Amino acid sequence: MSRPGRRLWTTSRQVIGNLLPLIAVLIPAIPISLGIVRAGVTWLAIGQLFGCIALGIVVLNYLGLFGNRGMQRKFSLRYPALYPDAPAPTLFVGFARPDHKSLLDPHEDIGFLTLTEDSVAFRGEIHEVDIPKHCIESIRLRPNIHSWLWLGGWVSFEAKIADKSIRLDIEPRKYHTLFANARFRRKFVREAQAWLNSSQTPSEPQTENAPE
Image 1: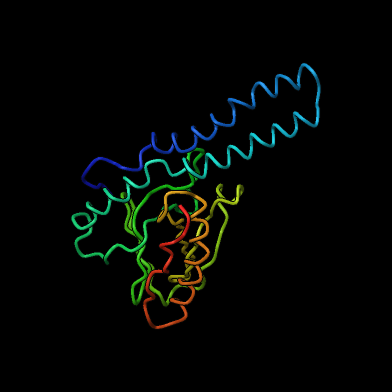
Image 2: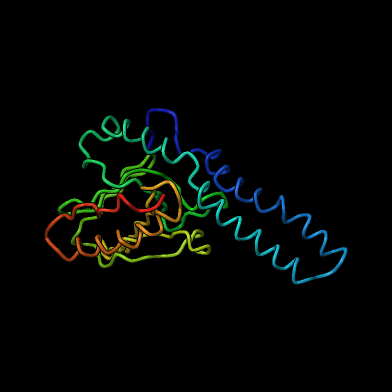
C-alpha cells in the first residue's frame, strides 16, 4: 500500500544499525586473528576475541536502533494523516511477516501497535494488520536474530481465521536500546496475555524507569 511522505525505515538505516556494530568488532578482531595465525592460539588471544564479541554486543545494544527516536517522533506526526480512523497509537514497534527474510534487519516495517477492546491493530509505513481478539489463540515470545545475543525477539500474536493460521510478529521499539526493549518485551507479553483473557483493554505497562 503506497503511503505519502519520505520513507523512514530505509535500507540505509538498516545497514547502519548492523554495520556499525560489525565494524566495532572487526577493528580489534582482525589484528588479533592475524596474531593467532602468526603465533598460534593462546589463552590471551582467545580472551581478546571473546572481548571483541562482548564489545560487539554492547555496541549493537546502543547502535542497533540507530535513528529510532527520530523515526518514532516523525511517524507519530504522520500517523493521524495516514490513518485518520485508526485507533490512537500506543506502542512503537518493528513488524515482520512470518515469511520475511532479510540479512539487514529482522524488522520489515515500523509502526504502532494498539490493543483495542476487540482487536489487535498494527499500522505501519507499508503494512496494516487487524486481528479480531476472539480469533487470537495465543500470544507468546518467539526468537529472532536479536535473541541470539539476548537482546530481544518477537512478541507473536497467533490466530486462526476461517481455518487459516495468521501470525502478527512485532518487537517493541519503545526505548532506544535493544536491552531496554528486551526487558519491556517480557512485560508487554504478560500484559497482552492478560488483555486476551479479559474483556477490558489494558493500559500500557508502566515502565518509564526502564534503562535506556
